Image (cartoon, rainbow, N blue to C red; front, side, top):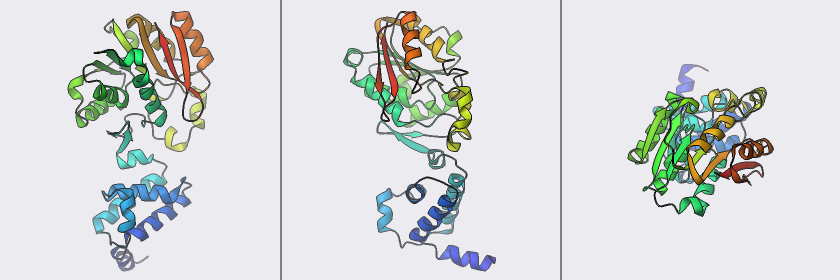
Amino acid sequence: MPASNANNDQASLTVRKAIRRTAKNLQSAGIDDPELTAQIMIASKLNYPRLELYTRLDEKLTATQFAVIEEGSRRIAAHEPIQYVLGHTDFMGYTFKCDSRSLIPRPETEELVEFMIGHEPFWQIDAPSVIDIGTGSGCIIVSLALRKKSGNFMAIDVSAEAIALAKENAQANNAASLIKFSTADFTGLQMPSGIDAVVSNPPYVRTSELEKLDKNIRHWEPQLALDGGKDGLRVIRPLIKKAYEILKPDRFLFMEIGFDQWPSVQNMLAETGFQRASVRLDCSGHNRLVMAVK
């Protein structure tokens, strides 16, 4: 297309046309729900609530807005997760910065936090001490700290990039003063004892299964946070042992696991000395959310 025609097309582009154009591009790229994805991306890039788009369909875009939307469309069409393209996601009612330094916070992990909050023997402790192992974006520990500001919270991750992101999220949500952060491999870290709860969403995907993940996961999210080794339990094994070492008696381990790992995890918990181990179904009906008592 000649430059003059392209400029004219850009000058006349409305929100309505941008949605149609973007949805068509995303559909061609094989993106699920291209119309909805286009709306979400465009609303975010224009700083509108999505439903407000319907009142602005005939508004013309500026050259800057056009360029921003085109860039977002290109990135999503390349199967980059929309959360990374937008730069944020919602979790437990809070907004978390989201980029390739950590996994995208997911509904299953929200359910893990809700499990903890709803477990009265833990949540009724006035000032619980909680360690989040493999904190990633910090979504778990920040959400807990904001709901229990009297607690003592610590977040650990082997990735310095992830810890940097978690700190940014704690700062943005006014929780930075509530949490201590540490970049370390927990297996060799001397951690405080007398802890009330250990929580973790560890890597649990079998190495052989990584290539079967969706493109937007395997090409963009950090493999370090996904790869659980040959059987998916490479991190979970030492995590269970470390949690048992540092927990007070009658205190709690909360953990997210792979959909088919509960029998193996249940055995490891029992062999380590944990009691009253239980698992809850996630929103997809999988055995995902583990709780055990020392």
